[in-house]
Length: 135
Image (tube, rainbow, N blue to C red):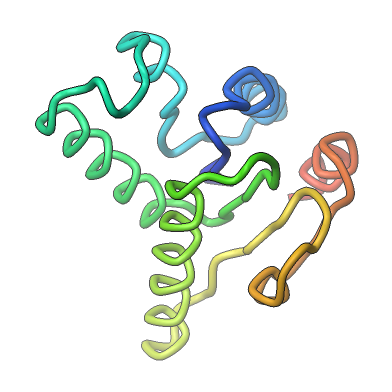
């Protein structure tokens, strides 16, 4: 399955571990934003507009290409909120056009009303990875 992982850049190590585990199961990660973060190595505020724009485009393309959008709940991040909205927009467009919908997955606690839009909610990373073996 093609999967996009959304997480706060503060949790880059967690995101890397999950991506690595999913790849080992045979899943494809549609955009590994962690590679770019490690290569650039500085906070977004210190990166040029061009690099930030390239990252946005790559992330949006990864979201559009995925079959499953996985949001790793954790520290607040504007980026993950944007990514979730983008995935929902694509999912609604797919539904309206009669195409198969994305699998929308939340990993972590449901902490606000918007988290109810997810198809599945898993308490933690291990629960996600157990479920992913069946995808």
